[in-house]
Length: 127
Image (cartoon, rainbow, N blue to C red):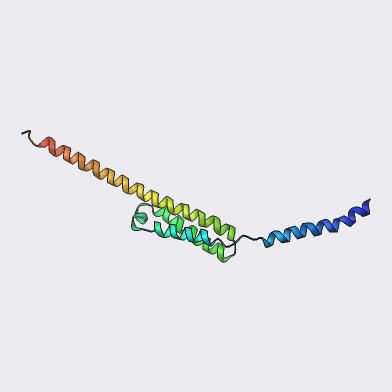
């Protein structure tokens, strides 16, 4: 009985090794689509308005895209995919933050104009 186990042990080790080896062959492909989408998102977000109104978010997206490129160079495709996805989201956040800032500024300007008009109307005598 003990010798039977010893005979099956090499077969089991061979099977485990084969599965591990085949798993290594099924490696993660280069994330070209994710990189292209991330690069387009960062490029679209790279405007003077975003640089002015959301510089930290834009820098984060740019840094993650650069890190994704480095991960591809190191053949760490899963990490590159993750960083590319994060760069895309960070670029979108930068755009939205900049848009929100512009909207707040426009709303404040409208309120200031309305207040100035109201003050002007109260200064003029009624006719």
